[in-house]
View 1 (cartoon, rainbow, N blue to C red):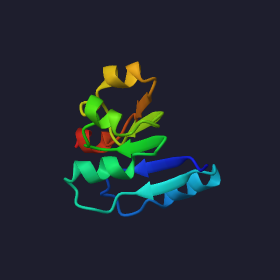
View 2: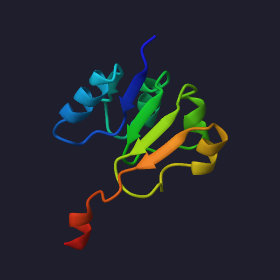
View 3: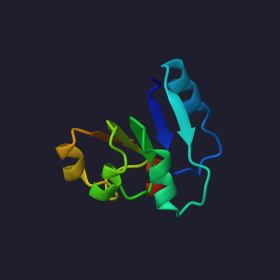
Length: 108
């Protein structure tokens, strides 16, 4: 069985880096291409994912129940405002963010 990773919040010009990174490691990468605000469709895409990458998508207890295989979440950005860390901790889901993300924007 292939291990699936899903990018649920898009908005960048390219995901070539992620595609190569995950492909080289043997992961299947799925990228959500539907309407930006359709949370239910995003959760559905990730229903069998072991890892997800998000920006703004709400990841709460309800969302985690819809993604029972989830083992890791990476947030494109700093902080975890949209991720329920307690709910993740209870399920042994690792959560990370991108340190230094957009530092140049903040300083400007």
